[in-house]
Amino acid sequence: MSIFEDSVTYMSVLNVANALTDVTDSVEDLPTGSGGFFFADSDLYEDDTAAVAATRYFYAWRDTAGVLHKTPIFLGSQIANAAYLADIARVEQLTYLGYNGVSGEMDDSNSTYFGLKVVLNHTFGTLNNSPLIKTIPYKTIAASSQNDLARGLALAGQKAFDRAPNRDVIFDAVCNEGVTAANCFDNNVTVVKGATTFTVGTNLQYNTAAGTAVAGDFVRLGGAAATRFTTPAATALGSAVYKIISIDTLTVTVDRKITVASGTYTAAGDMAEVITAAEGAAADWGLRMDGNTPAQTTFNPLTDTPFVVDFAVLSDDFDTAEVTYTTGAFLGAGLYDIISSQEAYTQFQDKMRHVSAYPSHTPRIDAVNTGTYDVFSFDVTDAVYTPPTTGINPKSKWRLVIAIEDGLTDEVTTFGTFLGL
Image 1 (tube, rainbow, N blue to C red):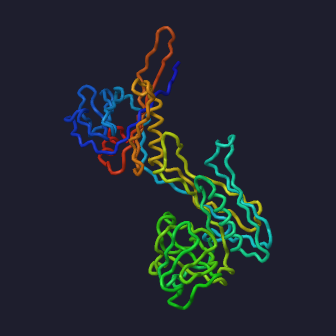
Image 2 (spheres, rainbow, N blue to C red):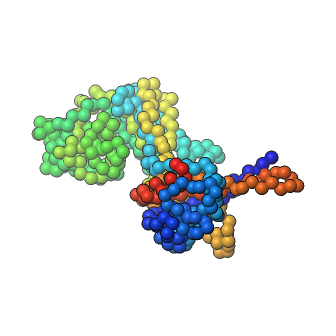
Image 3 (cartoon, rainbow, N blue to C red):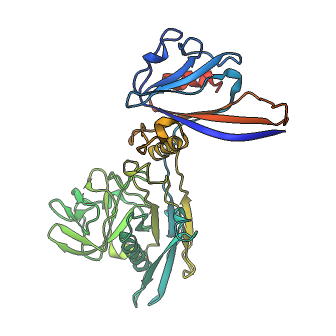
């Protein structure tokens, strides 16, 4: 009979190469911010061989404050469940209602109320074990069109989420009018994210002066899929489309706040495309919804929990428009929020004197908020001891997690060899 107890987890974050020489340098030679495996009987660095079953080792690291930490001593035979995970970028959710960049269309009903519900799955458990649900209402005009409903929902969605601490979902109207580079403005366009106006240099002509943008036309502002909120780029079918409400010389006012990146949308790059009123009226339209998770640099590992915006869209009021989940949300791996929160948690688990003594301990965070990390982990199982009176084998294990900042390739290779990965 055995009893298993899952015990403490140690966490080591490495931002600096250790630059130690195998079986020459000792644990005291570890630079700040680095770590490595050492022979327990000599304190010398173990660099380029796999762990040997009968050999005693320990792992040590020096944190950013210069303090040296050591794990308990373990045998190579006690290493279990070794694993390696390279860093993986976070992925934001992308969902459409109606036209989705490939196919589909929006409803077209006059004077009709539509209510779109957005269920924020990542908030589950914060409101009496239920997720937060946002309702996006819009009533179409008497002479409605697809673009009226798509743009109206985009504006209503903006207003609903503008009141939240974080704008979890970004709303845009899109349409299937073909991308035509020749219809981009002949002059550069200057855009400020969050504004309802943009400016055009010299004149409002497009297609080499063949046309001039007027109120009632539409403008498509480009951006690459992964960077459209940070960097201007060429237009695409999934790019945001805005209706021109009025023009004052070279200043153009549009129907809602601009969500795409601030910057210069160049004529040479085909980044700001004019869609005529007639073309917009004939096009199929949709509502684009992008997840908008807070930046890693704003994460507080002592108070926050890692998450990625994840939402469901309920569209019962719509007869024609269908929901398309184009890209699913993914938290990522080896990112600052995940690594730093685990640092804080493992130090909470550690009940040694330097942590639990009065005054209260503040967790040390070695992870860098702009860094990404490859992660090793393994368990160390204690040798079995059988008390003669009970015959029960109490087994306790501890775990080590090592986060290695990208670029420390020697550590990744060395640690992988030691752990047999």
